[in-house]
Image 1 (spheres, helix red, strand yellow):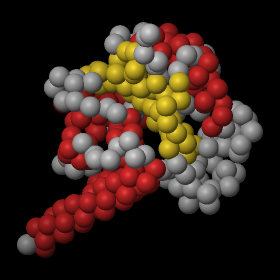
Image 2 (cartoon, one colour):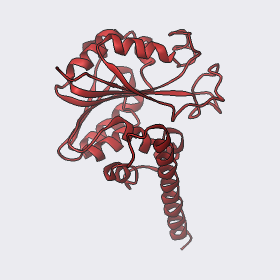
Image 3 (cartoon, helix red, strand yellow):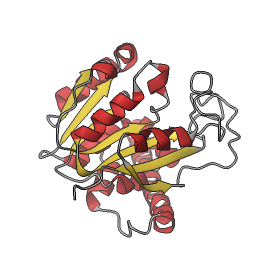
Image 4 (cartoon, helix red, strand yellow):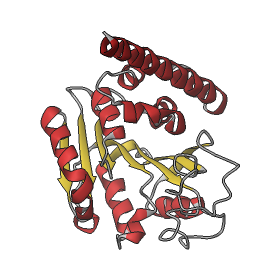
Length: 260
């Protein structure tokens, strides 16, 4: 009987957290991105999916998935690429949103096999609309006609892993449909610091991202302040206690221009 009560209490708390996260995201989104006046039901359904674990839900307050997914413009039927999907936080949401007519292509670097490979293979096995790939990004071959590319908290890791960032960005540009979205979130470093802190702090100067992605042909369609944290002084390593999940982050929506 005690066990049953615990299950019921957990379910109530879980649902309450989802509702609070959703309402908070909606408020922030309505203030900062009036373009998204109404959250599509497929996003709220994905965030409320029983498939999402308690560990994922706990991270929602810091990650604001409702607002981020709304800003990205991802929708049912889309073909999506996700870089560094290990842990499957966003993969779970994206697979739900794109549905059976869509596709989610996950690309992880070989070193992630030790902590993310098995989980991602299990996810792929259980979701027919997902495809898991471990590959050196310098040798990557992306699918064509992509709608949205996600790089969440991993752009700073590209130079750290000796990836030719400009070449990769150009490959992403070529693979996206005209009007397609390159959606990036990353930890902010001190303004003007460039790539100085990518190895020691796992942070990157937001201007580096803008300059490099625009150089590949993209236009910056929108930059959101929803994940900014003015109390973060940019001096702490992002995995440090008290800093993890509370970093000052930039959110970029880059777009491949439509052909004239």
